[in-house]
Length: 288
Picture 1 (spheres, rainbow, N blue to C red):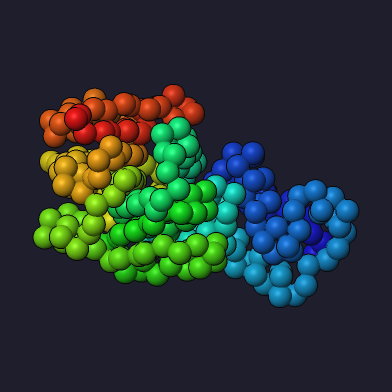
Picture 2 (picture 1 turned 120 degrees about the vertical axis):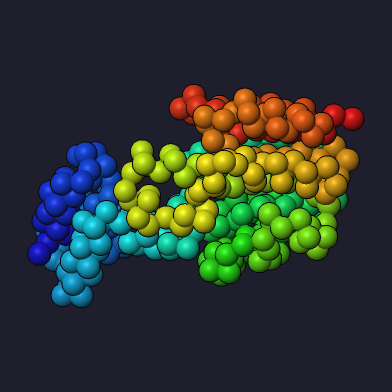
């Protein structure tokens, strides 16, 4: 089977689950992973045949994709901030919205931080480690700690830090247990993309998310959807350095409620929208 025939056949099979554009994009990722060639390079190699091993791997990938498994989990890789990250079902797939939060943090840093001294950042619920790795690449002098309750997630995050040649302090911690806060220091920035989807919202979610992405990193109880934000706000009152800042990604449906919660702890907040115009991030500072 030629590379072009494999590509076209995969698109046709994926059309049972995806629109044409998305099917083609997924097929591009799969064929690039199989052959090591990008879309432009394949224009000149359309008639090159796949090896027996490549055809076998393609059948394996196709079967997983037709079971609605996200392509990032099938290939065990995802791109974030122009870097490749290993992912599996122990961690969320990095999202473009989270990339926007990283950009927001970098803008604030460049605008307000002028010291070359060590700068401390805590990432709460690090998952794949995409946030701290991306920040460390752009702020080399930052001392970054990243925590997660999942030992499997910590292992993936550590692997990604090594692959992208950055040094980050990863710790397995249940952040919701306030007793564990005493093991953490004070920070210039506290950053988090915590679980924020109420269980009741799962009924309207896509199956490939529900079936494969870790529920521990997605969902919170219906009766307390802001639990992580309340804990982060409380933690910040004792673990933010002077002029420190909290950056959090939020549930778009609970922007006002989340701002009100931070305000109740004495924070001044700014609500930021993502590129799609949805309420997505909050920047919070203690009012001095």
